[in-house]
Length: 293
Image (cartoon, rainbow, N blue to C red):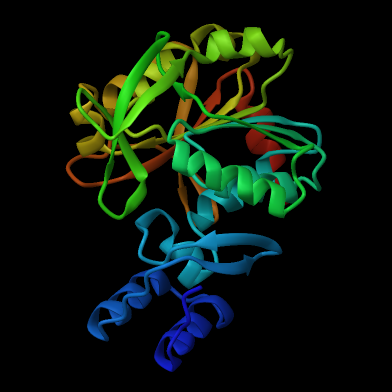
């Protein structure tokens, strides 16, 4: 197990124990860069009451290690919008951050389906579920989602376990893709309250493969739109957003404590996590959010 130096422990204390301040994540990253701090290897930590095994050199896990959380404002809004008894899909679950965080935020009184196609990430996801005694709350499946059934090859990109991509020749072979519509039918689900979608450029396809389910249940959707990754899969943010708006959804983004209508699609290297509310449900959800505030 990796051991931290004194400097690394000081930075860890600053990131996880000292009060939040504007752009803390940016300053912490710059400090690590300027001081030449680079920690590699697995370290077992507890964050917000949950036990994790994290490699600080992995982009997908470094903020949870160094800062104690990741996507804090998205998680803040999800915790306030969701309720006891909800059924939640975490698609592209990676190591389980959203799945585990929401399961515990809802007092383990919910049902989470966590789908992750990368076998290495899936193994880590299952380990985290077991470590935190969440087997009865989170159901993990080694699957990817698309607009059709398929078996594909994927590859990992550098030191980012969250960035796997479908390619013609890669090291992860025999990956099964399904549609959310088919999965829900197989699981005989009769409700879906929220869907978190981070599938490395397959967002448009995954949404198209879930149209019947989304039209039926009208869940809250949180979807990542990241142009470079989407373009490599022949898609773009506008195409994914169009699937949602055609189904009657309105799009919002988190601006700290506020949810504001999405005014401009992300371009270039901009990454945006977008909240989508169906018009039939958005007043109730947003009014509930304001009441909790």
